Figure 1 (spheres, rainbow, N blue to C red):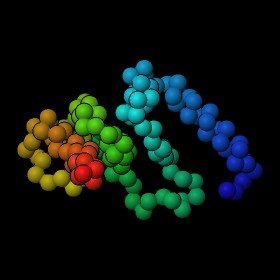
Figure 2 (cartoon, helix red, strand yellow):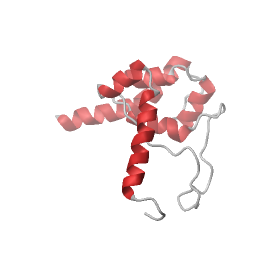
Figure 3 (cartoon, rainbow, N blue to C red):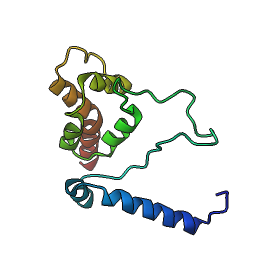
Amino acid sequence: MSGPESTGDVAVGVLARVGELLAGLSAADAAALAQGRARLIVAPVTPPRDGADRPAAPTPSAPSGVDLAAASATLDAFAHRRDGTEYLTPWAVRDLRALAARLGLRGVTGLRKAELVERLVDRTIGFRVASAAVRAR
């Protein structure tokens, strides 16, 4: 680590920021986190200053400006299909189609919104849950 801040100073700053984030959660979100039904995810909100970790191209976003990479990471954090369904249901169909394209889903243009949400959940959470069940056998 470079700069005048020590590791301890950084840890204190991180813990303070996490405390602020947790304090801002709704009661339902805090309960889901406490019960292990939700996870906190670290996702950059601004590009790095030095450009070393900056992607070559801008991160694709959905028509409404939803960050598709962040949305994909959010889906990856869910352990249950219902969480993914609740997360995606409020989205506009055009945003769902943009996410489907990012995930490599084909043949979704004619699907109704509920079917599209189901396909996206199956492709992300459902695939992982099914894989975990097979490994557990």
